[in-house]
Structure formats: structure tokens, C-alpha cells
Length: 79
Image (cartoon, rainbow, N blue to C red):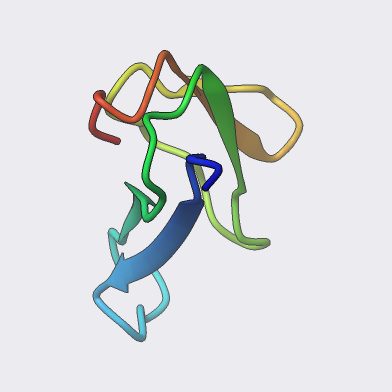
């Protein structure tokens, strides 16, 4: 048996659907469905067209190119 990590992401939006000028929250959940902890990894999400980026939690960084990136040390951190 080889033990490895198996990272899966789940995205959600609140409210869904969002109306024009609504403040919407985008949530990304990363789960390790494998048998071993992961090492460091990066999550990058594209900001939807027509929206304005306001902020990110968990040290998310607005890259200025329409994406937000999170650097995660391991699956022991919660995103």
C-alpha cells in the first residue's frame, strides 16, 4: 500500500445566485481524502468576471490579475 494525500476542493457562493450590487461571499474548502498528510500546496481561485474583489481570509493574496492565492503549509491548516 502506498499512502498519499488526495486533495479535493469545494467552492460555494452566498447568496446564490447573487444579484447585481449584492455583497457575495465565495468559500473554498480543501479536504484531504487521502491516507497521508499533504505537504505544502497553493490554492488559486479566479475572481468571477464583473465582480470586484474586496478581501480574503486565511492570508489570501489578491494577485492583481483576477486571481487570489493562498499558500498552505499542510492539510493541518484550514482554508
